[in-house]
Image (cartoon, rainbow, N blue to C red):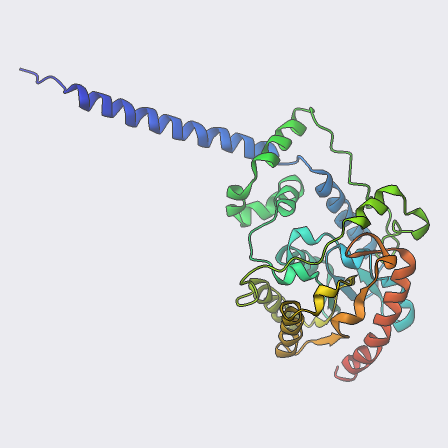
Length: 332
């Protein structure tokens, strides 16, 4: 005689089955939404992709040994590689892109542009030194739109896809949202050395002036200075450079001066950066305060100078780089 199945046991099995189906359905929907992101671009990602594509094209005409400037947009809108090249007679290329990509990804992409015998000038924004090493929405948005190979080598990025990016990506795929806006920046506005030409002081208008009104000091992150993961990433890059016969120098980013930077917490940040490069035997051009300017120098963010200020900043940098370049040549 067949024993009847207890009702509670039947209900439990149904519950497990429903839960499993629900779980698998959620993952299926997530997976389909994630796949839909591939090739869909955000405004910032479109601009970044354009910068890299234009730089690859321009790099074909740059001779080696050369100097490559690595940073976010503070270098793009703050250093004139053309002026450095003219003053030092060293072919120089500006690889300043977007700090939101994170120092690890910026260094990763820098490797594509350097050859044995070249020099990399590191000039990361201060936030990049304080990274806690969660990938930013800027990076996630960019790699899904333009660098799916990075996702294959870093699969955890799938779990870092924000909901708003997922919705945006699906909207782009369904042609419900445009992708042509690049936040006012255009990759075509680069000269042969990779410098932007889109920061003319004469072109500062209401949009830029409104942005300048709201500028704030660099935010310090609690406990980051005790164990800065970014320093480890930069140290590994320095090691890679040396193993590939690529020289490394460093300098400070150009940024807006605030009185709060005199406080001990900020001074500790500046000191830690200086100590890091000293420990890694990397020449550091100048002091942090030398490249902090008042608001009249800026175009639209605390890191973006207008063209006239870029000239002043770069001339100050050149005077510091010349002896370092001469010393570097004497050691080869």
